Amino acid sequence: MDATSSLFGILYTFSASLLYPVIILLILLVVFSLMLIGEFLSEYSKRHRDIENLELCCNSVRKHVASQEFGIAANSLRNIKQNFMVTNFAVSAADHLEKNMIPAIEWLSQEYEIKMAKRLEQTRIVATISPMLGLMGTLIPLGPALIGLSQGDIVQLANNLMIAFATTVIGLFAGTIGYVLTQIRKRWYWQDMADIDYVLDTLEVAE
Figure 1 (cartoon, rainbow, N blue to C red):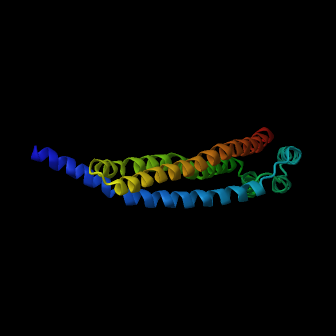
Figure 2: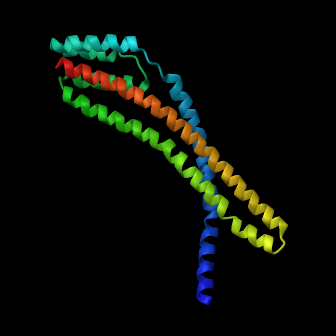
Figure 3: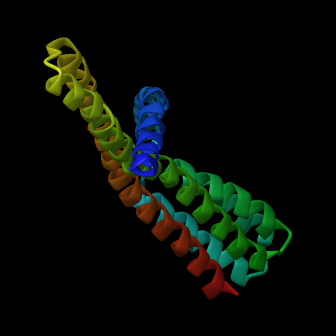
């Protein structure tokens, strides 16, 4: 019986010691999620997709690569004015095309795909971790709250329930922000990768 009590005591002490780290992490996640909103709005303001410009430039690239005029084709790539990721890819691809290093452009596209995945990881982590920490912050204070209830200590009960509810709300708030930003960015980056694939297809056809 003593061994069982000691084991339960260790479990209770360990779980109780996690409360403050969980609260600190939740506060940091909320701050980080608010920063992500600012980053998201900045990215949104820079997004500009012009299909006519993309088709015009790709047609020019196709024609000049077929004629082995790689310098002119590279300039056509640099004239692509699309979303931030696509424009940066086109400028980087133009440097390789100028040197007739077309296979390297496919490798470059994979690098940009990894960059997009990395940006999505941030919001995915927030969307996944925040509710988990919120649940931990809810369950940990329930032990002391029940003890307070059994002892008739209403103040202890109220304080612990307040912590439990607050951590739940904060966790769900940060998780919601992460989820919404992930879904919107995922659609953006699918669109960007479709445009990058179109540029790659143009170069493959022209070879």
